[in-house]
Image 1 (tube, rainbow, N blue to C red):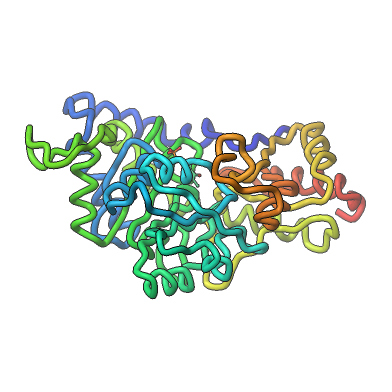
Image 2 (cartoon, protein in one colour; image 1 turned 90 degrees about the horizontal axis):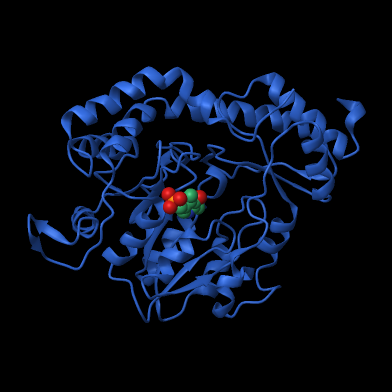
Length: 372
Ligand SMILES: *Cc1c(COP(=O)(O)O)cnc(C)c1O
């Protein structure tokens, strides 16, 4: 039995007719770059996230970058984020001219450690970007409290956490803005690239609408220097259909995670994901920590099971970010996690047979195979 890491074909097969119909509608309407299909998806996604406004853009990376620009962040400013995650967050900060500053993650939830946050703040700090890593919200209350005291903006990187909740509230609605990616493998994925910013701040949404469309406040009136980051009409139509299934699919992910949790209970050499108080995890990634990662990966591969590592190198130790001046030892939790993480297969269509196969292989690699 083979178990892929994710399976997009299986996701799209039952939606094929609906998706082709939606794509046909866009072709017939001839509105491909921005336009009514994008506006409709923006309304639906804003409602889903419990906010007033959503602005569709070209990608999650551009959602982050344009949000920082719309907040006036640039050279001389500092933006605090975490070193465990995908470098897009840091790229977005860099390309405003601001300086990315890291603080370590919490060793149980793998999201920004609020008790470490103060260490990253200086008189130049303008914003904080917590990352809702793997589908679990960062601990937002203490982060928001610090930001309020210091007058800082908070941008949620929710690219891995569509539909996740923190104390009952949707991610994206907690900070000043929430940034999403619709990269195909994300919990809500397009059939290509896409992203969105959600916010309750109408002025911010207005600025973002200008920035993503060459700074235009009206046709041929360029009120500011902008960019082209319009959302694609076909992607918006596709996303509108997939959004209807997002909650069900996230529920299926959580059920799969529960099967894994039960299967790994009591394994001495494995740390299963921990879900923090008041958080609804949507398991974009189910990452375990193991002491002997090479052994676990080779056992999984031998049994036809796909796996991955998110992420094997913390961002501060990547060659591109050497100039930030960090060294090994600066963020011990992120560094240790990077050595121990293994991401197991996780997609809504996974069956109990699939997860049992994965559980058996992991237990075997951890020397507990016979007790299954
Ligand atoms: C995927 C991802 C991004 C970037 O999104 P793109 O749509 O690929 O540009 C940003 N941050 C995180 C945490 C991500 O997982």
